[in-house]
Length: 616
Image (cartoon, rainbow, N blue to C red; front, side, top):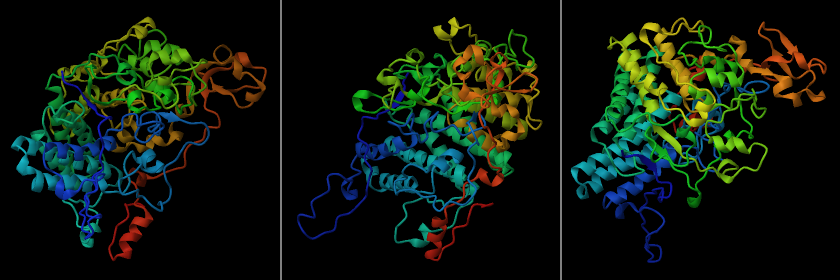
């Protein structure tokens, strides 16, 4: 089995394509730190070197050092799963002054990352891909075999499509550039926004070319057909379901979902990956090179000075924005039923210990089985740290689980995500577009294959059991199901919620399903609560003067019990997040980002028009 990883140790070269035209001999000497366009593109090695620059932009993994952008846990904790103390963070309410960044893209501003999970208004990476396409065609082609030429064209088209898919997910309509733009051609540089569907039709064509022409194996650390297919399945599922649920072009929705299905099947049909890993090992392992489920990953290595801090923020001591009771209640019981209908003992017990024993194994692999005051809700996520990290609570942590010196590898693409993309795309096509109905066999090779992952010894010792298969003829009857979502689709969505806690997916999922109203926490009191807790037994230190009038729990009948200094024995119930208040109200306009005032003014100063995003 051939696994791939990002070579962090390779030279990453930002290609500045310049021509030197001075008369002095001293100034005519070539710059050895930049790519000189006329002297480059000699062979495949040059092309590969140019393409390397894309990797750290798109395959962030756990980021580096204390970086949080696009990193799980620290970069993706804005969704209906999470509740902070005080007033909840809100969507932006005014048009920002700018929505741009440095020429090379840079790190997007926190507001764009938090609420849209994507890039700013910047076309550096589009330009870079278009330059690569042009130079491969006009300069390198003569020195490449036909297979090499098609592969590197596919690589460039993959990253161009990737960037446009991200830009569209944030802004909707964006200017589409299919070639390198001459800086002197202002009309082209400042052209209006291209309609979303037209842009994504171009992305669709890029991705089709990628699946047909990219190599199946380009060596360790480099994208190949399977890596690209895994990521394409996700990008096309997003756009296809967005078109469907937002009532846009239904023919395009069907087309994009069909490509999501096709891309997923490229991976699933290869037989190269399998569910041979326990869930925690996907995120907390020092080396993912032999993990049977991981298609692509980013490697971290102290010797190469490439480390991160995500493991530290899962170590049991560092503070976290905690998950709320709404998420805890969404986890399926290990008999395959929702907690309201489950026959297993303690199904309605929402203490962390009971949840770890009675819920799908991903619960125990994701959260500590005791309450932890380092979490705003007392439910503490340790998904991205090995079990050994928790043994150092109250002690001195080793480097790999402290500070910004973590070295556990980060999965970029894994089989679990591919099969969940596949089954959702298949179900949408079946429900709305006349596609083949999902069968039990389909569930068995997707959701049930995920549920059948092996358990590690620690989980087994805690009494964790695999979850029963999802059966078409006995779907769970969830009283919380939205009326406009079919029972099977509800379970597919539940599976994603359990699988991707703290990862990129949840906010993007509820955006594309047009369910952003889930972020209105006034709709359900469970958003303001954490797990069931016996304060006297589990958190006796909280029964102090400092917590009088502040510490509160809600009993099973819905009554609020406030600590008054003498009622410690009565402090049993769902933990109430201190000073909780709902986020500022928002409207549907926040599904898409506004363009910055500076960007609009820049167009206007040159006599061009950049339309603002609808609603803003």
